[in-house]
Image (cartoon, rainbow, N blue to C red; front, side, top):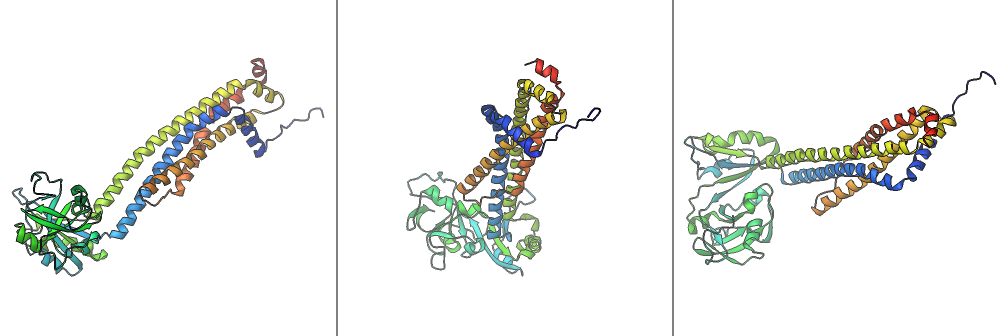
Length: 398
């Protein structure tokens, strides 16, 4: 009727979606290349977060298995800057502390270990020779992978147990092999497995205290004491250890907690993760620029379509919504592909390292959110530019 105001038809969400999908299907190669930038950024971020989370989970499980109640006592420095020495009776004094469950010690021996007496003494392979008490393995909660640990029968004999890395460097894979130590032959009676809380043991050849004193000139002074106590008493024991070990000069005693080193490693890994996430964000930004460029070109190429739609009654808002939907769909495509690739990459790498594959759910939620933000920002300017085209100018340009 005359004077009646015309109301433009509204586009249902399904209509907007169909329009956006149809526009993307007409240019598949360009869509794939544009989405690739988004996919690379999202995949990088998901993979980094997944690997970091898997590594952290493995470390936490390792700490739960090994415990955080192990303390080590080592000599510090004297007031003159010289290396101090622990008293020979230090281990016995530590064992008398109430909350202490188990304590053992090692002592540095001034000799080398070689496969034969023909190898020069200077060629040590980085392997230390240490005297060890019979209860060391129980304190460290280690395990023997071949042979046996030192016992009452072997700790006073020329027998040696090799740490995991020491055995690897010597090329020894079985027990019963003889090695040259202190100008005589010792027999390898055991090989230990990895010890994350005591990596120095992995690089050592261990003999009993009596054998070290008898055959290798060991003076009987421990250089490291390992102690485990109840979890709730760790800090209290840590406070009294220096004065217990060396009552006259407690400042010459150093007490450390090996699990702190593992936690510090986790913190360092988190810092590195932040750097890699930054690189992933840069890749995502570059992908967003690619999407914006694709949408600007699409607006220029489709001016005739825009003019025709405007002539048939499409409003500026509907044109704006169409191009914004295309940008979001393009970004979402890259985000979904990137999240899938990143998750698979993180899981594959974690499984190859023997870690539990863990990709936090919030990482995928963050990827979706980042994709929507990038899609919106990338498509906002092209959509507004398309909406500003007048029907007559757009049709005249075709």
